[in-house]
Image 1 (cartoon, chains in turn green, purple, cyan, brown):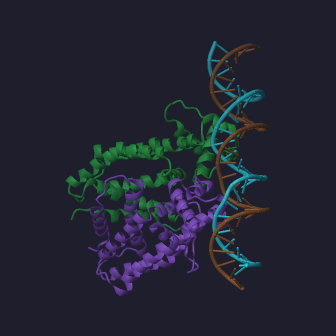
Image 2 (spheres, helix red, strand yellow):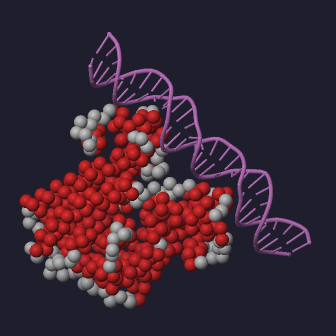
Image 3 (cartoon, chains in turn yellow, blue, red, purple):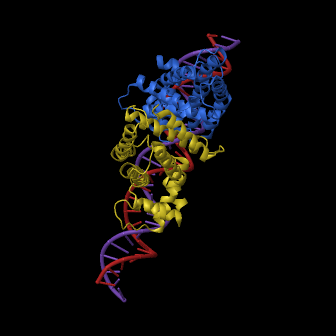
Amino acid sequence: MDEQQWIANLLKENDRDAKLTEKQIKILQAAVETFAEKGYASTSTSEIAKKAGVAEGTIFRHYKTKKDLLLAIVIPTLTKVIVPTVAKEFAKDVFENQYESYEDFLRALIKNRYHFIKKNLPLVRIFWQEFAFHPEIKEEFQKAFTENVYQRFKEMVEQFQEKGEIVELPTASIIRMTITTIGGFFLTRFVIMPEHEWDDEVEIERTIQFLMNGLRKR
Amino acid sequence: MDEQQWIANLLKENDRDAKLTEKQIKILQAAVETFAEKGYASTSTSEIAKKAGVAEGTIFRHYKTKKDLLLAIVIPTLTKVIVPTVAKEFAKDVFENQYESYEDFLRALIKNRYHFIKKNLPLVRIFWQEFAFHPEIKEEFQKAFTENVYQRFKEMVEQFQEKGEIVELPTASIIRMTITTIGGFFLTRFVIMPEHEWDDEVEIERTIQFLMNGLRKR
DNA sequence: ATTTTTTGTGAGTGATTACTCACTTTCATT
DNA sequence: AATGAAAGTGAGTAATCACTCACAAAAAAT
């Protein structure tokens, strides 16, 4: 029920009145699960059908090709989940100036993303794996990033550079270091060493302190 | 010729007197190229045979299964190329104490890895992509890392902590931050934005400075 | 020079692949 | 209650898959 609501929201990208049948939701769930576990190329449509409890023909009734099914999962994840969440988070900061420091912003950002990734780990894994092989995904991601995230992030950084809180390196470098440091933590935490015992609270705070030390104007 | 020598050295893991025929080298070259481009699961053995200019049966003469071919490429890359290079680099530092600072060590490390990745990009891509789906690869990597790299890295960090150069955070955290920062740079540079115009010298130096600011004791 | 071993071949194998289509069932509209 | 549209089905299809094997050529060992 909880899962269903979540995955149903994903597909409602164009129409607001998208009504997914039970079987359609089952297909999406099975596809996400299997793609994340075995990878897109190693997953057969018959396997998805079996896991979803539908006939194989039902999948192709709704998605013309297997790749269409992949994109129906990945693209909405990008455009509907990642972008607005990030954009909203940034907007709140830049325009309402709610955070007093880059550090506070960082803390909100990393916690927001932490919960998002933890909740949507299979989706993130699929995106991460298939990103390299499907130009559509790569293009969609770069478009979403440059149009929504980058610009706001830039304004953000420049704001705190003006305030003298962070160092006067090129904005692009600061953004890259911020993202790779946070991304590196998540990658280690969720992909490379998921079975390791993590004290997430502590490690997040350390990551923030490390980032701030690296970026603070002195 | 240059390629041949390089790939031939890879397979010489057990026997010192490994003599690869011309066709065997062609198979390895074709496999590396295609796996890197399309991914292991999306590459057919017939495609490899065609590209290598051999009969399909020839592949299975030397590798029992398709997966054997993958492992014959990836595992030696790990055990013979990555580990010794890193270990040697670290050993030189820890035992002969050639570097005067963590910063100098960092600079040597990042430049060493930079050239390695640039030279072996297809191999790195294959490893990175298949790592998630093949337990053998993951295990081999973790084994190589904990046995060779981690221990030396740890001694390294502790040495410069004692000297008071870097901060007294837990060693594991410092190692994680060092590796993810450097890895994040390479990932952005070679995978996510390879077509971007990079001034590598400058960006490497910025990355080092960022890392040192984040880790320096103050 | 002859035998043995290694390397290479390519047609052939059954299994599996993504996808189709004629048909049935369910649902919404009147 | 009747009708049309949408959703669902599963046997069927051609193509492709990883892999085999009987045989040939080349190389090595005798």
